[in-house]
Image: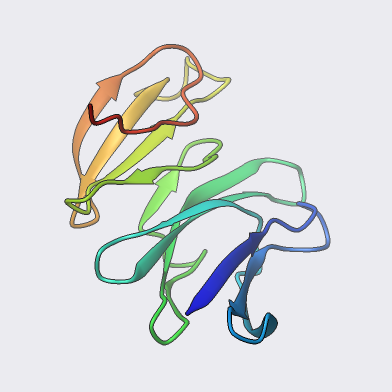
Length: 146
C-alpha cells in the first residue's frame, strides 16, 4: 500500500501537495503538486481524496475551498481553478463519514459579510444538503459511536 502525506508549504513561495510513499520500500514514489496551500484531507469509500485548500493571494487575502484527487491513479480531478466548493474563509479540515457525506466546518472573522458565519456545511454527492449553525470558530470534528 501507499501512504499519502500532505505537506502545506509555507503559504508564500512554497506551495503544498502530497507525497505518496510506498510502504514496502519507504520511498517517495510520486508527488502531487497542487500549486496552492493545503490544510487537510480525507478519503471516501471510492478512493477519492478531498483536499482542503487554504491559501493566500498576493495581498494576503484568503483563497480557500475543496479540491479532489483520485488515489487509484494519483490524478487531480478538481484543482484550485475547478473547486468543488469555494469557501469564504479558512478551511482547516473536514470529515467524511461512512456514507461518504463530507462535513465542512467554516468560520470567518467577518461575520457581517458572510451569509452563514460559524457553520457546518454537510455535502452529499458534492452538493450542500444542510447548513448547521455551530459555536464560534468551528474547525475540527470527530464522530463518536458508542
